[in-house]
Image 1 (cartoon, rainbow over the protein chains, first blue to last red):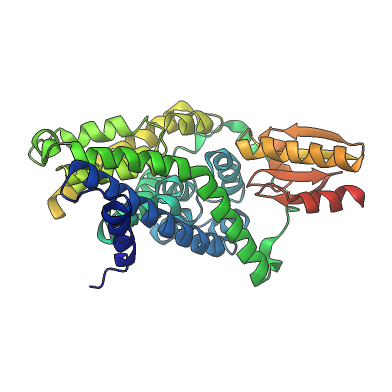
Image 2: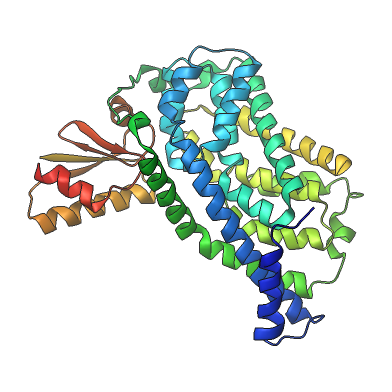
Length: 323
Length: 77
């Protein structure tokens, strides 16, 4: 396969070895080359992905979604909700209004959760960074298993019949319909919105990308080979659950985390363990739980956290077997 | 004129309020700007993606920080 990123590697080599005059085969050379190449690759993919997904998102709004999913039961609707969740990464401050909007439209609780699970778990910024660092194959595995986690996690929550553990006020709210309809946008307006979100997201995450890549680069150049294989390798059965349990409460910028993970994989961290850790970081975090507490009672939050944690641990083992 | 900024405390919502206040000052228009944080009111307007701007009960925009140009248009009408 032709490496479409070859030109970026070429630029990184030129800059490191010729412009900066750092000798190859040195720790410094390895670090600097890694940093330049990764930063370029992440920003290229980030820009393309955000633009593309934002464009798609102008067609699929929460207002439309809740109408489509209202009153629908069955695995296919969990799949649909989960897929819609992958392309609508709302900031966690919108998750409560969307949750209420779904419940009000009669979307079953389980289907709503399928959406809620995937929404932070699979988002275009993380996908771009994963693709740039650990490759397309692992990224696809992450996206597919993340989507399936949303499908089955939501389905399972639906089976538990926990409707009464939603805060009572949620059922009293009436959702109005006067918010501006985005249907009447033309191509130019959609492109403008997409361009705005590229600017917005890149403007917000660039510093984390640089920090993450710099840390990853230092580790890449200086940490001994195989250091992680020794302690967190596949033959350590506790590595996956420990990684997931650390990741669950952690609220961190994944954009900084992913390049670090890349270099950890380079030193022998199994990809499955790494992906499970990232899933745990993305899927649940303490701030998100605090926000959800406004609309969910403790038992439902507990069930949600437990189901997701156990599924991610299971997924991590599965990854390590198949990868 | 009453301008409501709907949002649950994210940074974009704060910025939206700041931009609106700045434009009001520039244009010399008097208006009451309030931040609405309770879910019931936000959803009654049909807004699910914040920040949103409501002027005299009419939703002008939802889901992003408004352009300065747009704000000028809304307040000078």
